[in-house]
Image 1 (cartoon, rainbow, N blue to C red):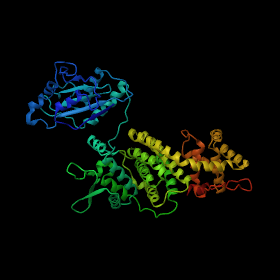
Image 2 (cartoon, rainbow, N blue to C red):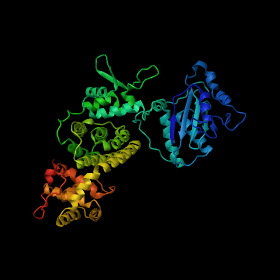
Image 3 (cartoon, one colour):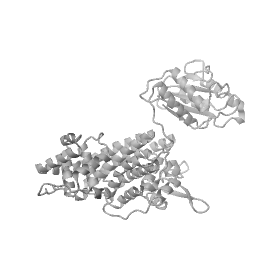
Image 4 (cartoon, helix red, strand yellow):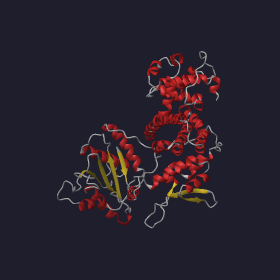
Length: 547
């Protein structure tokens, strides 16, 4: 159940006209009162002799009595909507809910004879509107500060008592939603998204690429965004605002947005804190994508064993990774990656303050891939996406265990988009590894099967029966040829992540082994030569732990 309290207005009759009217798309049916301040307010929906003018007059009585002492915007308007899957509540139930919300917000405290006048109107099965005039019987204004939070807190209790869906609550760290006017303007101009949303996406992407605040502003200007930097008298930067050249007001002037109105983490203080905590970017080198895969692969473990502030920093960098990937990935993957980045945006913030210095290594790896072309090796790209997917799932769990319901849901949605992108990227390279597995000599396949049974006795038969087993067998053979201990690698791969939710355990292990043993640099399209003698694993556990 969700409450929406709109900005106070000054036309009581105008609000009533809308509530009792047909709606913008004739969606209003049977508008009528379910409750009022005294139970005797005229109801134009059910009483033929009652009019909207009469109802507006009785609601405004105290406003008239207060005269110039009445607030200019005296109309308080709150809608309360049930979830689509909830049962249809009766009028009496809605009436009780309205009274409880009015009591919680301070508009009409229970038992207060001087409480504000109000009515609750129902014109649909799933919601009601409460309209009140903000002048009490003693002609003073109500004490209704923080009314939204107080209403929302009461609705949490109501959901449990009435057996309704318990809606995930936010923590006031979400980006501001576009207004209805912004949405309608985007529709008129044929845009799929509003100017605010376009600016937010651009700013987040370029922030992930920037190394200093000054570089961030230069990137914004280079992308065609109008930028105005605001300074203190000392000359230090106080803030900034941005606009799109094609988004103007009625006077033909750009419509400006400050960074904080795009998203809380896009304010200048937050940007400055994040970028100044980062060490200089590493020089371009050919292993940037591998370093990103390895750095991202450690994120789930870091989330499990770090303090909350460090964990939030790693989730922030994961969001930066998702913002950067669409710029660097092949065209076929960009749409899915853009959707993943947009979904994860909500998961990137919480009330926990990030210690950005804890995630410098991963942030350097993220920025480095912009200076290196997308890998021609499809296996490497699949490995990166697999690592990012696992990190997103870990972020979902991290948020859920801390009660961050909206962030957890956002991470889940991002993981779904990443899973689809991964499947596109992994198809061809996984098929190539699979072919190499089918070409292995029979004695090598038996040897690798024995390795699996020894390392993973409880899951071995499932793995050996999966279609992805030949690819895992080829990977184990390649790891052994490279000097690794396949059994030890398997053990490490399974202890670092759970496998219960994996659709194909063999496929997940294939990519994990590639990351742990850094096999992509050795991957070719041909089958690795079989060893001339039975393979004896080389134990390099200490070397692997310290790399």
